[in-house]
Length: 228
Image (tube, rainbow, N blue to C red; front, side, top):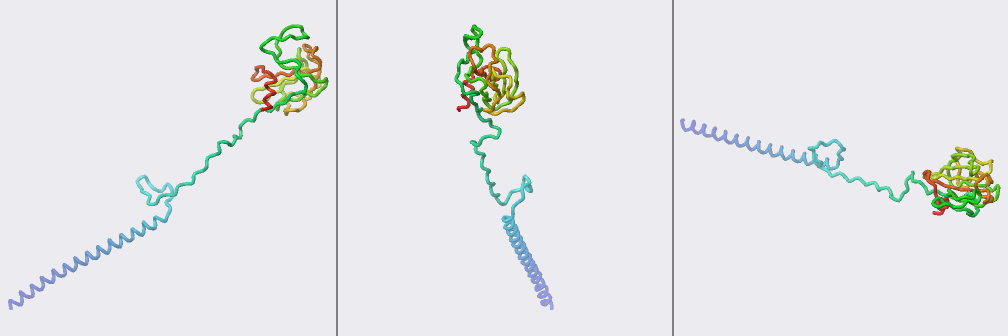
């Protein structure tokens, strides 16, 4: 009788250990399946992320981008040879009359004036022309003054770009422009006369002078700007 009791208690002890081992095995299997499924799910999420663009500005400083962004196409630089919209064009000039020079520019040395019979500087050039011949603007500009000079007679002064000013003297009284008028190169502004009392012995001509920034210059150098 006692043997049966011991035998039953032994079987019960063995059954307990077997059940414990089965539970441990079940737990291990469950854990393995859980971690395997979790790894597969994470891999699927990463694979989907690869095919999705990440909006700019949504990543913090500690975030790491999983996809390299495609470099932006660079904008070609502006051609350096393209002229600026505000670039100034060279000043175009033309002779105000078609006559020859009969008295040249002389500001660095005195020249003899046959009318006044003395030696003095000459701030312009005297261009031969018939009495009443049209006098044209030497360049585009704006009429500054129309007046009668005590020595050089009726005179028209025109202002141009880059500080140039042209002066047309020994005109007739009936000039063709008024102060404030816009004129173009070659436009008639007056007519050759004989109003310059200090140059009466030269005959019919135009007295033409030029300044740049209020400094006198040789009118022939000014006219040479139009040949460039």
